[in-house]
Image 1 (cartoon, rainbow, N blue to C red):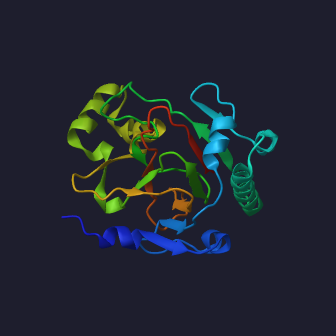
Image 2 (tube, rainbow, N blue to C red):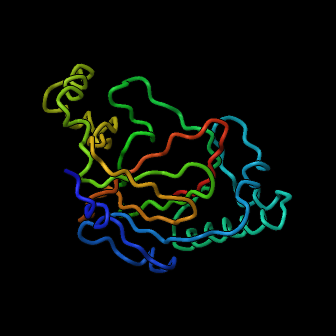
Length: 232
């Protein structure tokens, strides 16, 4: 049985950017949220920003070139301010327009695309920051409510069929091709939407981390709707 306290223990709420960036993850907490009710018309930015293909980066320069109403300008100011805050913090933010991500259909039972619950990994200590301003929001999953896919017997058996090498190298193979980063939600899992306008910090897998990385995924977009988000 899933315990609702698992979700409560995972997320820490903060009220400003300074606390978001300076507060360390501790104990079971591996997701931190600066909750905000943003003003402005972010949909206008989505409608007026050029997008060829399924995904594009919206640079601050391109954002400034858009002819916007007063509500659109308010939204742009928030985007630019968030971008500046993250840059000043030392992060490398990108503003993305997304119709959809590429899907991984090479191995259907263990896709390694961003629609699958996964953790981020880095060789150095860092965090993932993200905010959805328009469109469907990303999801996170409490660690206790997910199963690492490479530990599921039938998936592991399929992976061994793909692997052509000595048994001693199998775990390295799983890591090299990122299979070990992906998780499957348990049947009664309480999936948590990150919502619109909130700036999140998620823990990732790195050598110095003392807490579990946050399981997260991109949402399935609504047909005809473009997402607007910032991530780094």
